[in-house]
Length: 346
Image (cartoon, rainbow, N blue to C red; front, top):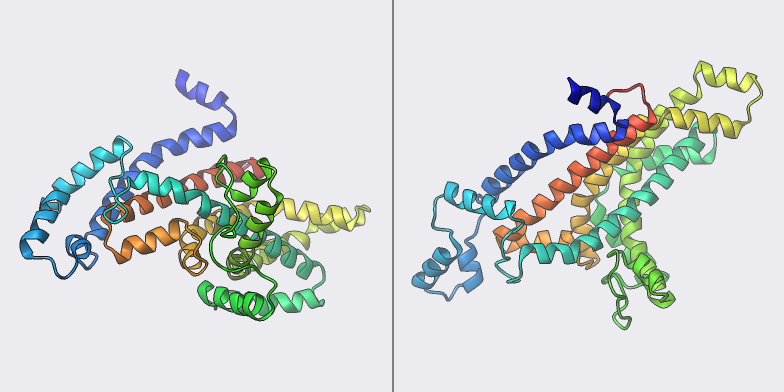
């Protein structure tokens, strides 16, 4: 009883977070188990891939024994679970580095890419949606209809290749699509892992310009493909709010158009926040091919390499980090949802 009263006395965002913690643990265990079992179904023998086709049967068997691949699946899982609880995700079979070290090296690159891509996606989607609703017969409204249909119909890697061809190869206005910095520029000492922020903290304007330039094409690729879905949903939700009775009453009361738009958009936030959270989590997986195209050096490239080499520890580590990231994003969405509309019980 006292605990319930104490819980109700806490701020609403903190109550939501505490409520989520009890769900996160079994969810992460389910992810661990499902990932472990599914990865074992991948074709290819890691020992054979590591040793090459010229390896003898004895050499392959010896390496399998060393890697623990000859034990039963349940024994392998319990051993893996005990190491994960201790914060050890194993050692990559091909980089020979601890998986935790590999992931920590690559996580900042992916987070920087998808964070800026999400910000640009929101700006594009919300701007097009609001303008098209306010001026339904305008040019922006006509463009949004075509864009909304086309954006979801084209794959991101194809858009990325087109942007590379036209903006880099033909027009020459975009930097080379290779990595996060020009090869001749030294990376600053890592503070946040985001090169755009670390270069500013170091006062290196040349490196900052290079980091922003290298973000241009991959961010534009992800934003172009994903803004369409958010735009269509925002249009629908915002249109209902903007054409409602209370907005007509506010307009008749003499409120400016800008204030009316702010009120309507504010009341449209809960479902928009949900969609943004879903897209942010989705971008982590969507960035895999984009990172490969732009040689970004993030989690996407690491995951592709792990799949191609049947690198079990690396692939399990990637899925675990991706799942944790998505669960954290959804928790943040719940908090923002509760703040946007206190009437809703999350």
